[in-house]
Figure 1 (cartoon, one colour):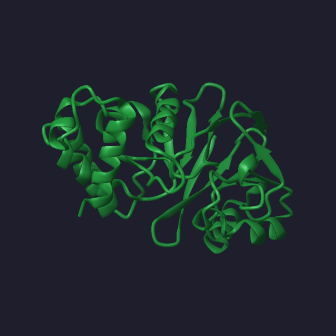
Figure 2 (cartoon, helix red, strand yellow):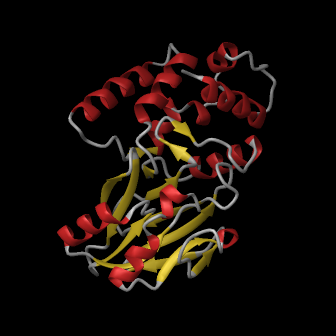
Length: 259
């Protein structure tokens, strides 16, 4: 499996995912058509489907132009996003499974950022799985709660955290540096966060994307996966006995207000 990040808009990523055995490809979250077309044509890819993680315009804006240009008949999204995703032809929900070439794809419903957010877990024989998380799980962070609740987001992040630790995470935006600045603010003694900040700065300095990360690494540095951290709770005045959803809500509010 080959995954190519495609920078779009200001800080979005679409992805071109190719099964190297069959030659079939899919596009994940095409916010705009032009950069995706350039990447598809450069790779001479045969695109058979579009996978959307949620309905926001900066993840679906290129759907219809791409579908028309390449004759794509399969445009996927959550069942509740029917009518909100342009050109959607396929409805997905928790536990659905499908194939793309020789790749196995399974669906997790991960509401929080939006109520219809889904993740695509893609597996190739003999390779580490990958997961496309949209705006639910970022490297070093999570999405804002536009339609969901802290409890929803905690449950969704817990689903993602339960995937194999070697799973590679491909998220919807290049927010890693700013996310890690917040992580360092709320957990200043975390040496893994400091190392991740240094690496992200160097990576972006070379003009390269910070994606993918791994779930194993996210569990060490991402404050939204570390809601039990005593240091984070003390920093944000979260009661030691507060439940995980309450802690996540407090961390999310602090991130919203963080400058």
